[in-house]
Image (cartoon, rainbow, N blue to C red; front, side, top):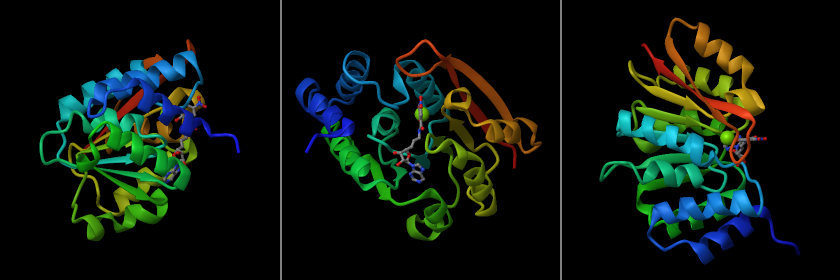
Length: 214
Ligand SMILES: O=C(NC/C=C/[C@H]1O[C@@H](n2cnc3cncnc32)[C@H](O)[C@@H]1O)c1cc([N+](=O)[O-])cc(O)c1O
Ligand SMILES: [Mg+2]
C-alpha cells in the first residue's frame, strides 16, 4: 500500500540528515516540506520564535500537545538543559510511531517522553504519573478546538504556576478564536502575539504567548 506523508518525511530524514544531529533533522524536514510535500510542522520561521521563547524560559518541566511527526519536539528538546525532559502527547499511533523514529534519529530520545493518548485523558493524570507539580512551558499545537478546553483543564488540575508560559501555534491560521479571546481577556494571563506566516507559505499566522499570573 502507498506510504503515508509522515512515513515519506521520515525517509527524507533518514536520507538527508545526520544521525544524532538535531539541526540536520530540522533542516531535512523543512527541505522536504518546502520542496516535496507540505506538512503541518511549526516550520522554520515560527520555529525560530519557539526557539527564542524556550531559550528565554529555560524550562525544567515542559509539555507539548500534538507531537505529529516530532518536528517541534526536536526543536524544543535540543534546547533543554541537561537532565530536563519534555512530555509530548500524541493520540494517533501512526504519527507517534514516526515521531519516535525522528526523535531517536536526532539522538534526543532520552530527553523526550512521548505518551500515546489524548490530552483530555492524560492531562488530569500527569501529576501522579510523572511526579510533576506544575509546567514551566507548554506548547499547544494539536486540534485547534482543543486549545481552550485544555488550558481550562490545566487550571483545574493545578498544573500552572505564577509565570508558567503557554505558547500556542496557529492562532490565526487555521485559527483558535475562542482560545485567543480567552487568554487575551482573562485577568489571569498576560498575552502577546508573535506575527509570522503559516509554515512554508506566505499566509499570515502567528504564535500567542500567554503567561499565567497565578
Ligand atoms: O490542524 C493542525 N494541527 C492539528 C494537529 C494535530 C496533531 O495533534 C494530534 N492531536 C490532536 N488532538 C490531540 C489530543 N491529544 C493528543 N494528540 C492530539 C493529532 O493526532 C495530530 O498529530 C494544523 C493545521 C495547519 N494548517 O495549515 O491547516 C497548520 C498547522 O500548523 C497545524 O498545526
Ligand atoms: Mg501547528
